[in-house]
Structures are given as C-alpha cells and as structure tokens.
Amino acid sequence: MRSLVVIPTYNEKENIGRLIKAVLLADSSLEMLIVDDNSPDGTALVVKELAKSDPRLHLLVRASKLGLGSAYIAGFRYALEENYGLIFEMDADFSHDPAAIPELIAGAKEHDLVIGSRYKNGISVVNWPLRRLMLSLLASLYVRIILGLSVNDCTSGFKCFNRRVLERLDLGKVKSDGYSFQIEMNYRAHMEGFKIGEVPIIFNDRRAGHSKMNSKIVYEALLVVWKLLFEFLFRKRKVSS
Image (cartoon, rainbow, N blue to C red):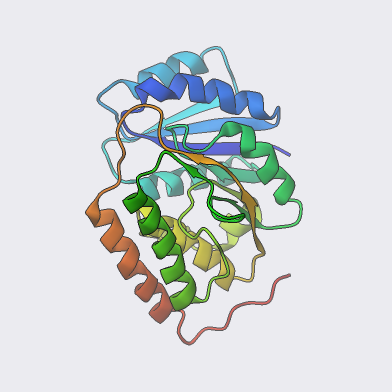
C-alpha cells in the first residue's frame, strides 16, 4: 500500500535533510510530502535539491506562513488526489521518532486512525519543562471530559490516517490550527464512527530550531473544544462500519 508522510515546515533547514533520510529508511512503502510555507531560511531549497535524486520525496511550497492546520489539509488533499492508502502526519523537528512509523503502520491494520501517544503507557516525554508537560496533560484531560473522547493523547501530532477517514471528513470545515487542529481531527473522526487507536511513542523535545508554541495556540485549543461540542450537540455518533 502506498503511504505518504505529510510534514509541514517553516524554518526547519537545520532538521529537514536528516529527517527526510530517517523517514524514508523507516519503511520502503513510504513517500514524503514537505509542505513548506515559504521558509525564509531556505528549507524548501534543501528539499527541492534532495528530491532531484529521490522520486519518493515531494514538495509543495505555499506563498506565505498560512498555519499548521491548513498545511496539513493541503497535504491531505494531495494524498487523496494521488491515491495514497495511508496518510501520516508528523513534526519536522525530530520530536516524533521516524523509527516509530512501523508501529503506526501495524496499528492501522486494526484502526482507521492511529495516534502516536505520549501518554498511552504512563508519560513518555523527554526534555520537556514541567510547565509544558502539565499543559499538554491538562489539555487532553479537558478534551476527554468535555467531548467524551476516549483518547489518552488528544493533542498528539504524530498520526496515521486510513484514506477512508480523510475521504469522509469534510476537510473544508476544518479551520483549526496547532493543538486544536489535532483535537478537531480526532473528534470529527470519532463522530463519523471510525476506530481510533493509540500506540505508545517516546516524545523528544526538538533537536534544533525554535518551538512554534505560543499562547494563541493554547487559547484556540480551549475554544475549539466548545465549538465542536455545540456543532455536534444534536448529532449522534455514527456506527463504525
């Protein structure tokens, strides 16, 4: 089955070359799509040069910094148009270990959406400050309580979608970014009756570059939970097929 790893980038020149090599070595079925928001550090130029010698590497350059959520949506649309069976999302900073991708592939045999979970078996986070860890844990608890979503790690950005999930979801309705994008995709998949599974991963803080996390992303995540609750308030969850 053809599989595509979608990775949004903005100023990831320091990481991207090594990451591409590591991902493509993880499994022979994998291809990659880098969605770059016109990084001023030349990230896209590095990818373009590497793509000349590797047909499994693809590049989509957007005009400006348009946000993580819309970058993933652009990547998902590309994946559907090009007939990929499994579609992955992951960060560009090595916080998600490419060596864990085969575990997600294995999980996709039984689940429609597989999440690389930092909290499936306790806490598996390395080099995060306590404040950041507590924020992430509380965000997942907040989502589970309000939306009734049975997922340990609601904000993880390391995922594998079966194409039927993305085909059924109305991607045009997804407007969230950052943490809230992950929450929204999980919940919409859940309400469509898809089976969501988690596989434990070890999450490492980024190796190089700077975190994109800010207070706006946190506030958006708090609000989108309530927007989703009211959107689906009078709708029943579909039965898994």
